[in-house]
Every structure is written in structure tokens, then in C-alpha cells.
Image: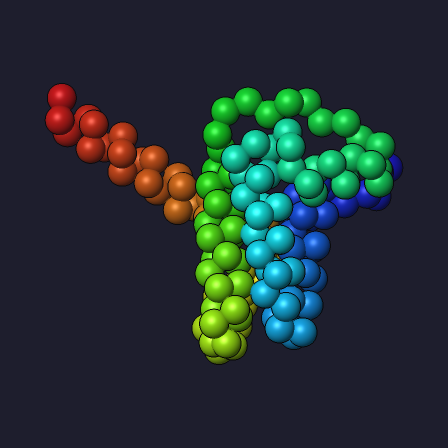
Length: 138
């Protein structure tokens, strides 16, 4: 039996820990670097820093991902919130940074513990609405 956490659990756990550290120590550069790492993984999953690190630690090699999926959309949202939290910290607005970063932490924790991904649900809903709109125009 393989007891290693999945890549998703690895990424979620690290994202939670690094966000909490960045907020607690008020280090906007840490949040910005984390946001860029997540953004890179969302845009090009094969070049994700988390995927690379997980691969080095576990020795598991992943096939090249194909197409854009819901988890990438969720990562784009998380990255946007972390970039916003970083800008808020740079602007000395700690409360806004905590709210934005806290949302990322809470949603990542929910995803980690229950498997429910709000960003994925938003993606599916938008895709469904786009489909319905196209069908109504025909």
C-alpha cells in the first residue's frame, strides 16, 4: 500500500503552510512567490514547481497533462487571491491581506480534507452556462 500523499494533497498542504507563514510574519514576497508558483502550475502544469518538487521527493513521474481543466482554473483563482494579498501586505493593509489569504487557506483546507473544490465548481458552472448560452442562440 502506498502511503504517500497525492500531488494535490502535497500542493494544498504546502500552500496552506506557506500562506499562513507569509501572513503571520507579514512577508509579502513569500505570498507573491507562492502566487507565481501556483500561477505557473495553472498555466503550464508540466512546469509546476510543486509537481517538480513532489516528483523529486517521491520519485513519481507524471505524464504530460493535456488540456485545461477545473483544477487549473481553481489554481488561477487562488493565485489571484494570493497576489492580491501580497499587494495588500505591500500596501500595509494587513486586514485585507488576512481576509484574502485566509480565504485561500480555508478553501484549500476544505479541498484537502473533503475533496470539495470551490474553484472547480465555479469552473463547471461557468462552462455549463456557456454551453446553455450557445444552445439558446442556435
